Image (cartoon, rainbow, N blue to C red):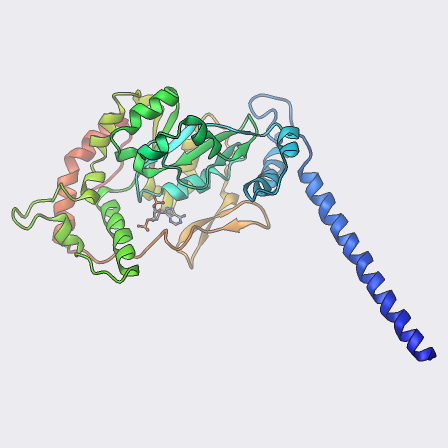
Length: 346
Ligand code: A3P
């Protein structure tokens, strides 16, 4: 009988002990998250205010991994939105293209900056008639929550090549900043092809070889009807945009350099966006397994881009590559001339 009572007591004590430890852990976690929810704007003073510069990037990044993350998951209340003065802002800058230029890498890397908040998904508001018909409020509601002092950036690479987009963006904001990330045109075309090829293979479909698509078999000339070729004629697309926006509103990012040496490219973008330089070498580390730079937000959180970024390209007949490079050459020269940025493409 006594033995039974002792066992019962021991079991009770164990349950009570577990409850106490659990509550303590919960409290610690709660205090941690409350700390993140302090109603101070981490980027106050960013544009000339008095807040200590040394502490701000880390605090802001904690904010981005904490509260903003909760918002994205839908775990925050309207009260918290109000308390923190959080808003869904229209983008102040858009990465308009170019597809396979490194648009995702650019967006994710800019998001390392405490003053930048990215729209995670491609919204396709300006290039999709159905979405566009839903109106600007629909677009704004697709944007992430941010502090008013932060800037929102979205990327939809189809914008660059879609006829109606420049006028539509102009109507929303005629002084918006536009980012275009380009890669050597032939490499970009092959990357574009590789993405489509992978999609076909996933559906167990066969597909043409790149050479067959890129070269017109009747004339043996470059096939300008092939979309991957057309997209790489950057100057043609840019000229349409220049009917609405002055060249000063564009910034050209060298997508090939963003792969091998991302920091200087990001620093140029920070300058263009009038942001204080905050992205540093600490935020970027080369991952030998991936063969690409990955992102480091802080000692705990880092990430590489998904495996769909950085595919192995199929081998292409060197004579086709030469033909394509010769074809793109005059367009590239014009592109350098218009943009004032010379990229050493062959
Ligand atoms: P490949 O898959 O041809 O290598 P986008 O995001 O516009 O679709 O561009 C995809 C390209 O981004 C990839 O093309 C890859 O080369 C490039 N890229 C640039 N920086 C990268 C990074 N840090 N990690 C992965 N891919 C990166």
